[in-house]
Each structure stands twice: as structure tokens, then as C-alpha cells.
Amino acid sequence: MLIQNGTAFVDGRLKKADVRVEGGRIAEVGALCAGPDEAVRDAAGCYVLPGFVDIHIHAFAGADCMRGEDDVRRMSRALLDTGVAAFVPTTMSAWPSETYEALRGIQAVMDRPEARGAAVLGAHMEAPFLNPDFKGAQLGECLRSPSVEAYMEMVRELSCVRMMTLAPELPGALNLIAYLKGLGVVTCAAHTGAKAADIHTAADVGLTQITHLFNAQTPLHHREPGVPGAGLADERILVQVIADGIHLHPDVLRIAALCKGAKGMALISDSMEAAGLPDGQYDLGGQAVFVRDGAARLQNGVLAGSTLKLHQAVRNMITLARIPPETVIPMATSTPADSVGAKGYGRIEPGAAGVLALMDADWNLCGVVG
Image (cartoon, rainbow, N blue to C red; front, side, top):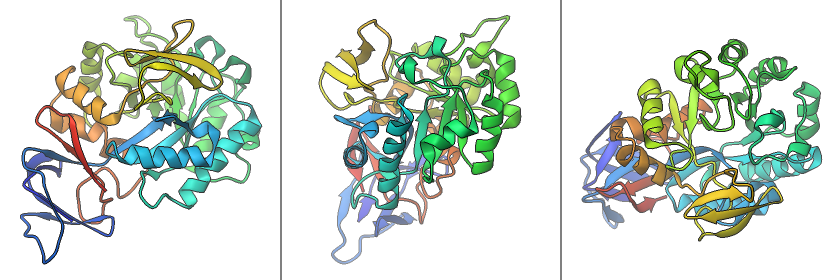
């Protein structure tokens, strides 16, 4: 297929370029002519972006990765239609055997991908090594002290774990971070009471990301910068941000983007099963979640993930936070892909995944190729 007449994001800038996709991969980029009998998509008036990469997503459109392989496959198929090329299904607090079964389902879709779906890059474990005082919507009874032994009890023979979110101030956390670094697993801090010094120390042994910046962590204070301050100041750390206008004020989104830039901030959905569905009552880890005006909360008012889609996060960063598109687009594409070593995603270049997101002049999704 040839995508013609669009404004494509190539080599870090938006420019007029055509894109040819063959066999699920980008074949050519430039001023191209259609071949005999080649399908053509006219993208006039549209921005042509690389498929999005979501490194923190629990559930989507009624499917939850904690429920196993069938639900992960449903997520894969549905996410592709929102312009997502690849994702990292994210587990939440559960008993060790339940976590293992969830990981087994993720592994199965990695090993046998959907014929038409967003690629599964691995699993992101957001639990159980979290601080109970900052548990948010996580189940407190399932939280555990960090250790290699506890990790292996959940993972066993599986090789799908790509990311781990934990509280780095907990006893044993630094040893686990160093161990996971040796396995190539990305470690992130959240649901944590850490001070800024704890974050810098954790980065010394391998921590590289902050999960949902400002949420479920110590606050930014001018004499104790906390987790957000350390994450924004430490050049070794990438920050994940939920840009739905609910979790963070637009000014905070702008501050974070100005501090970290295109390569230091990743847009995530952190979505639960109500994403892509109407307001109503849903489930998260066995807890009732009430979605009103797109905000997902437990009965006590605590935010319980989001209903955000990544293309909406891109629009919000451009229109609400007033960050230039050339800075925002990598935050949803190449930056998250690079952060987990996902080669072939997040860029429009020959050989890369042939999933493209088309957005109109107002930064609304208007089509998907893939």
C-alpha cells in the first residue's frame, strides 16, 4: 500500500513524504509513485505518524491482561485500531499464582502473535513490590517485600517480563533492581514513599524510569523534591506520564515536558478495561471502578487507571500543554520503544513496523494503516 500526500513524521520532523508499506513493514519513504495495481491511501490534510507504543497498559475495551491469553489477544486486536503498533501489557497486584497465569497469557501472545494486532513487547509488572502507604488502586493484601526469590516465584520459567515497577526504598529493592538489570528488565519507581535521594541511589544500581509521574508517589517540594523532583532532574531517568487532563494539570504536563524533552518522557495510557467503552461500572483487580466523564475511580474516590488512548494523549500534549508536535510525537512512539529496546517500532523508516497513525489538522485520529 502507498500512503500519499500526507505530512509524515520522518527523522524528527514533519514533512511532505509518501510512505510505502509492504508485507507489514515500511518499504520506502519519499516522493513515490504508485505501482501497477498498488492500493493507495490518500492522506491529504493528515499527519502520518509511526504507530504508537504503549509501555504501561492494563486493559482495553473490556479485556484485561490479568485474565489471560484470550484477553491479551483481544487487547492486541482492538489497540491496533487506535493506532497502537506495540504495547506492554501491565499486571497489577495479585497472588503469585494469579500473576504467573497472567504472565503466561502474555508470553503466549508474544510467542504466537495475532495475525492483525498490535505487537506484544513483553510484560510490565506493576506489583507486588510496592509501598502499602502509596498503593493507590493496587490490592494491599497482595503486596510483598522485594526479593529475587519472590520475583522468581511469580515468573518461574517465563521470559516475557520486560519491565518492573517497584518502591525502591523498600528493604531488598536495590538488590532486586541490580538483579533485574542483569536480566535486561527495565525497572521503574512508583507506588513509593521514596525521597529524592532514594531515587538517585536506585538509578545508580539500574533504575531508569518513573511510573505515572506525580501519581502514587511522594510530592515535589522545594526542600525535598521527592520522586517527581528526582525524576525530572536526573538525566538517567525517563518519566512516564498520563496525559489525560485528569491525572495531571496541563501546566504540570508542560513543566514535565520542558524538563525532560522528547527523549526523556513517555506518554502512557495506564488504561483499565473501560478505555474505549462508555461511562459506567467496571472492574480492576476484583475492585469496582466507576467511570464518570472518562475518569475511573474506586468507590472511595481514588483514581484507578485511566480510560485514555495514546492518540488522545498526543492531542492533549499539543493542545492542552502547548508542546510542539515534533517534541510530543516521539513521546508516544520512538521514546517508549527505545526505552524497552523494541527495535523496529516508533519510527517511519525502511524496515520498521508498517503500522501508521493518521491524525487530522486538529490532532484527532482519522485513520490507521496496518
